Amino acid sequence: MVVQGVLTVVAEISPEHLDALTALLAELDGALDGEGGPPVVDFRVLETVHFARFVVLPPNAAGKRHLVFSSAYDGPREVHLRELVEKTGAGFSRVFSHCAGWNVAKAVDAALGPYLEAHAIAYGAMHVGYVGRTVMEVQREEALRRFIGKTLDAAKISTLPTEGRSAQAIRRQIIQMVSKSEYRWALEPRAASIAPAGVEGWWKTGAVALSLVLLLAASLVFAFVEGQGLPYLICLGGAVLVLVGVLRFHEEREPAKADTDIAQGLANAEDEDFGITNQMTHVAAIKPGPFRGLLLRAVLFTIELRARLQFYKGDLGGIETIHCAHWAILQEESPRLLFCSNYDGSWERYLGDFIEEAGAGMTAVWSNTVNYPRSELLVLEGARNERVFKAWTRENQVRTDVWYRANPEISCRNLNDNSRLRDGLRGYMAEADARNWLRYL
Image 1 (cartoon, rainbow, N blue to C red):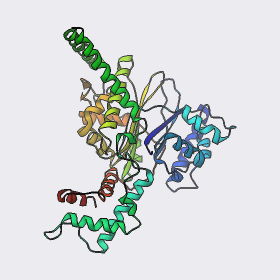
Image 2 (image 1 turned 120 degrees about the vertical axis):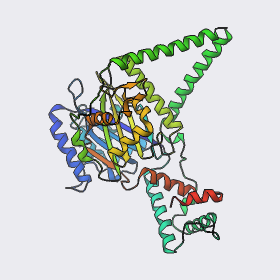
Image 3 (image 1 turned 90 degrees about the horizontal axis):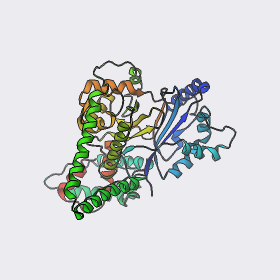
Image 4 (image 1 turned 90 degrees about the vertical axis):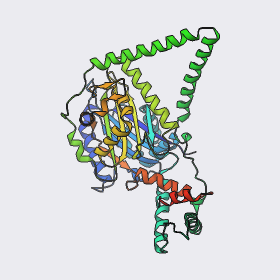
């Protein structure tokens, strides 16, 4: 079964190799854009990769620099890793030869997979906007939509229902047209369903959530059976009040950004808004102390749970422009929060969507990081202070040294509309539904 996932590899850069690595990544980035010779790592030959990036992170609290490689892939993971090794192993070896722990003398096919696994970190929360669709399937469904549109245009067939011609009749004509073409495969059910199970490791999130619910329910039942139901609820309410009190104590005393000045990061705008799809890499220091660390993990788990069970059909809290995004905690002496996103539209529009549609969720995450705009009760204010939030985002944004996307001309919304168009070629459809379906053309 095909499942989607993300691989995030973090390796320490050997200090004496930093300049050489930066130059190599610049060469790779230019080659992927058609400048110079062939790419050192040619992502274009990979069939499992939707998005990939290399990023040299800014120094951590100990002054060390790290290289991040991240890929959004079609899995299972072992299939993705095997393809990386077999098709781009030599290039990856050149890149990671600048990092600690890479043995240049060892055979690449034997060393690269274990090296990537050993340096991989788990994501805290992930959103996938194309669950159940492989790289190849995204391309095939785009070609299907173009074929239907061109064929209808050539035959001068309108998709607008009239008094004597129903939407159902137009749909039947389209189905017949597809059945006689090389696109007849679209009439068969898709190989992987658009469902929670389409994301790698989804069951772990569900199992943990179910265990917590059962534990709470069991303790509540036990308390009532023992005649301690009311004291139990009082203690539970008291624990919530204590948690809120501790949270407010931190929120009122921790430093927070209040101005719109941008001390660093403005240069990153030069790498943005060149096409339909864009990217962001963001790193922020997590506020010190166990309270913020535990709270951040709880928030990320909640987002992960909602992403798996609720937001798997192409939108994240109402935002339909995100192809793939994930958060991961960098386990360092002073931990940092890494965020990688692949989205449609401009940076300004993307941040605006965050604020309007998911401001509370974003504040719940990033209010646990240093110098975030003042928040209240975890989800209030914060991102709603738009200009300060955007300035804070710029200051913590990191330049993405190399970025690859398999389908740069297909937006996330179009990708999902193409899938709805394909799925609508099968089964019965009422007139009203058929009218709505024709809008996907």
